[in-house]
Length: 266
Image (tube, rainbow, N blue to C red; front, side):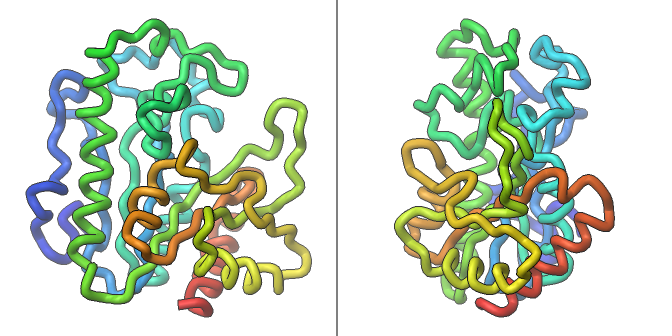
């Protein structure tokens, strides 16, 4: 489906225009929107869908191996989100650029918003940024993405609605090996997380974390506190361990498993 989806035209506030101070006219837009008129009550977002770096930033001084790592994106998350979009007939918004340029799921005041170091890797292109340089990234990428999410939710406000953020996590962080195959994360509102956890734990061969390896906290997270908690709609974050998503078969298995769980709780 095209960026405009079934409606043929996005609301003006959600159109993915480019801030040409950062993105050249021939580069991808700040976000991708798929199937905005989908019939599912579940709205999907993927904050860390891409590891692309705008040409103007010269790969932030990093090499291809570093940009392939989890520090730059959530490997496999976009493929799972697209699969769920298709299976559920759900609307989906995906980030267009790397979290190293600006992390769409971090408050702007957070040191992880534009990280100088990520999992021990120094990011040369993020060192010593001026306020003006940071503001360009906010204007070009952060604000358009979150305006698009808000516009999509506004357009569906008269219908039953849930919000699910799709992520993946590295099997090992620092010296810590993570045992969970996947985790469901939330803040104080557990209306969506609890039933999802119950359904997924029926797969007895899987270790499903409850706010593991991460929870959702307004000090560290942005998307769900603003768009989920802020609207009082049921919301949760799904985190899938990246070694589960290293093949098409693994991705398809998680898409099928999650689609079944979502249908069971909506």
